Length: 182
Image (cartoon, rainbow, N blue to C red; front, top):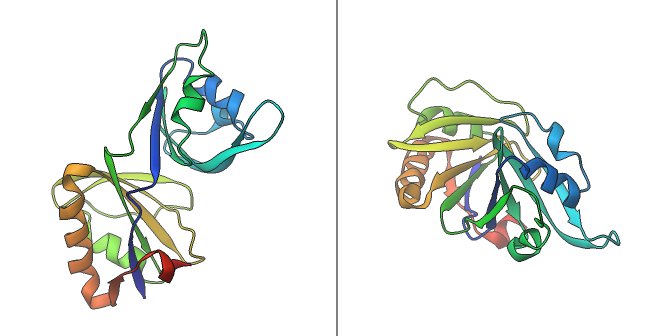
């Protein structure tokens, strides 16, 4: 019914500054500058010869701030800034990511957010509080099931996880590891 998967070890970096979209457009195979606020997309990033460097999700958090989750490419991204007004910061340890996947995932999310929950479409973001912690929730997943990713500051990840598991009991929610996901 619902799997609760810790995705926190996933590499994360924040790209910010007035030229952040310009930098990402240079490195990505998709047009990042046209990504609306509060949305995310999957894309690979390649070198000048079109060879794959990495892939992952790009979240547009604000006008000049993006979060990239996927392959650890911080140094490679930084090497392409040159004269652009952009900054690339490794945020891997600043965010916890809890993936809530399965047919009842929306019910579990709805039961845990502190504000009224309005369903979000695939690749959209919603900003909420869970267990008193500010989080953003992305309608994402890689399991083939309906699902969400809850992005939380690392300091609150344990509280968010406990709240999700508690709310998920009545839906049969269970922690799942990488092998179960595969």
